[in-house]
Amino acid sequence: MVEEAIESFVESQGLWFAFVVVVMGGVILVAFIEKLISYLTRAALGLGISVFSLAIIFTGFEFDDTILALVFASGGLEDVALGTALGTALAIVGITLAIAAVVHPFFVDIPRDYLAILVVSPLILLPLVLLGNLTRIHGIGLLGLFFAFLAYVVYMEHRRDVPVFRDTDVIERVETDGGVEADAELEADGGVMARERIEPIFEDDLVGDRVYAGYVWFGLAVAALAGVVFGSMLIQTGSEVVLEETGIEETVFGATVITLLLTFENVLLTLEPVRRGFPEIGIGHVVGSVVFSVTGNIGFILLLADLNIGTSVLYFHFPALLIVTALGAYFVGTRRIRRWHGVLLGGLYVAYWLIAVFVFGGVPISG
Image 1 (cartoon, rainbow, N blue to C red):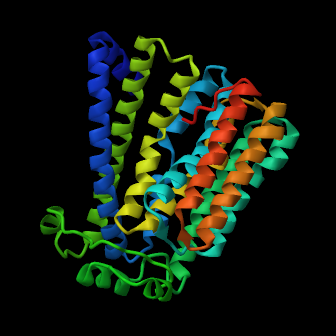
Image 2 (spheres, rainbow, N blue to C red; image 1 turned 30 degrees about the horizontal axis):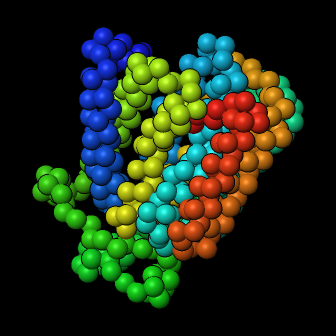
């Protein structure tokens, strides 16, 4: 695998090079996430489709987490693979949405049906958790549910009178006046907040107003997503070498560092769109990632190996996921994400983490 080859090379160069790789990965990740946001907004405008649906498709798939989970499943570590999927879903709300709310409180107006899907998606696992033994058939069903979710979003965004941030008038107004508006005006526009101008980028001159400009921006977004995945891969491999070389990878502190590093990509994919005035992209990432983690991710795992659900999943991890996800959906439903919302979500995640370590003896490392 590419990641294993990179890690082997980094290890051969020593600890100092591992630090360089982590920093380099962070720079690449930030740069390509900035590009991805710019490309997605232009692709949505050029194709006349919803940036929310594009955000779900582009950022909802947790490629790196899925690959890691498949490696665990194929190596006989099915329980670890399941923990990866559940841990990612919980961290998306308990860390990434929480940090975005604390750092940059924001307005967002997401249709109620999408929020209902966010709340209901973990409940899909309830009958499976009660069964205790999951097989490939269940995996196929979960994958089918995820692709049905994608089809539903695309269909609803196509027929909705005012799709989530597809309104051309809103985008044109953002371009002309910088998007600085009073709260009342934000509410009148359906809660769409764009506090910053869609800043010109040099690619605008290259793409221009060609007939197929929307498809060009779409292609560039795909390329930017590849850069995001590569930057995240560098951070993960570099950080693993650092922790191994310093001998703290098995400690609670080491697990904390790993969790923070592995969620860095998700934090940026949520925070940066919010900061730049396109919170629909950030929330699309949250909704898509949670739904994918509890359906598609586990579905892929079950294609390789059967799963036996432990009692701790039923009585602790699963209820924690339900509570944090439902609370996050409720806060998004208020349309005004406040700082205390983030503090509460983050506090619940820390409490979950501590209970997992000191009561259940496991360290919940997402990803």
